[in-house]
Length: 149
Image 1 (cartoon, one colour):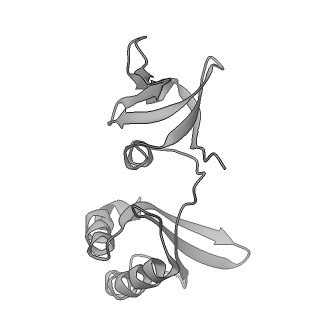
Image 2 (cartoon, rainbow, N blue to C red):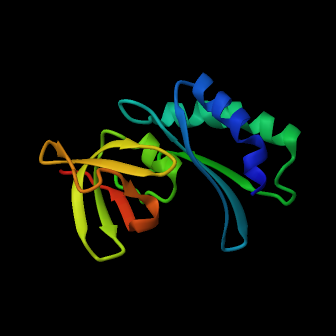
């Protein structure tokens, strides 16, 4: 994907604003192309954080000219309950409560204790799962963070 070539620079810009880059996606809604940048921050993302990141990233994107057609830049939080799609999402969500559905239809709820490029470790009832400990990404059908109100 085109964004891979500028991901490190985007991360640096977002981190200089006191946040972490969670996700970047380019999508089309109606007739508008949208570049959506999702950021996270300990304690939560404020509107001021989104504005600062947007103002910091916009000139960089203009210079790089990676998106050929006109687009709208959106900077926001991914939300308290969000789908986890790739290792980066899991790594950035460590310490949060998650719901995992495995390919064998088993459903597990626990705290994401650790994640790396191969898989995840969950803390369920204060004990990290012993059945191989590591849950490989290849066995996960669906995963999301959950928030208890």
